[in-house]
Length: 135
Length: 421
Image (tube, rainbow over all chains, first blue to last red):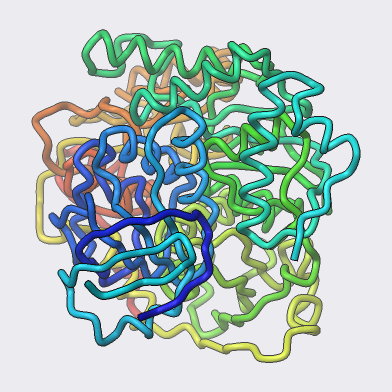
């Protein structure tokens, strides 16, 4: 079990997907399908929809909030996000989604090295208290 | 750690000043809490990066602000939209998408923001003074405001920038606070040949390397000439903010917070020092092109960030009396286009050479390039970074001169000699 700081609270489950490099959602993820579209990214072609997504960092465009909102509106957002350090750009897209009556996506700030032993695809539960539990 | 709100801010939050301000404050307060801010800070201006249509959620949000009586509380400019409102046939999309894109741009104008529609508001009169607290969106504009102007903003994304504009406040955190503006990385460019450092083509490459290397850290670059231009710094920042989350870089002896190295590393305990080598620069140069071995190009795009009047002057010198063999797009602000129009002949000569000027938007944020795909040549590190994913085009990076020479014959022509050291 790993504990993190709750940035956006919520309960969620999904398969663990650890991105191999930082990503800019804008220009990096298709806002409708949730697929990595940056051909230079090592996870090119992978879908982040429904995953418990570990992000080594968020980079690039400040339009990433908008992409996060569209992913939530389309139902192709990750089920939860685990970030190495708090990033307002992603969180804002989630806050707006909730204001507009769409779904939320829990976000935790966690030490990603604590997940080094967790294989990709492991079914994880994220709790509103900030725990990541292997199912 | 709790967020302290003033009496006035609490009144904003509970709706005493209308639902739009209340909504803005709810988002602002949640953001401030998750960022660990202890208070909000008053801002003097905002730049909203919310005009670009990514999907209908963005339209809904903007129209909700309008419907609930939203009004910006500080002078506010607008970033690019998905349409060239001055040349309506430029963008290819189905009518319903065009209509939604238009609604999104209109909504932000309705709340009192200026219809600048540019990613380079600092080129069209929006120039906060040194030390001013502002809330800007658009990664290159953020880097420019902090680094080149010495104003103070964090990286505000879509929506939060609008919330800040409505509330006239931003979370007091990060780069709004002086001590967080000190450099943690020193980049030594002393070894880079002066001849290369004089060239515009060097700066997007340096920026691209910097973003990958430092991520979100504040850096200071030493060993650049004091003559480095605003356009070169703009290109450096835009590139660094594409490959990394760079919101502030200093150039010792050039940018306003770094009259010398000590001014920006003095208070920092530990500083990483990196000496720029030929391999680092060449690696970054290579990475900017995805189609290094191709010969033919299908289009050229310049103007990310939006072309300045100085850059148009340079382009004009290169294209005057010549004719481009492939589509050549120059993206700029409507205000800069108006400046060109006043000059009359300049605009005509650019058009006669085959330069298509795009206003209010640009070729990587909305469908403008021909659908057939192919190879795009650019002198912009930001276009080079985003074009493959956003347009499906392969990219070749080169100088403005390279871009023009290549466009005239339709084949890649690059001056490689300046990179050998």
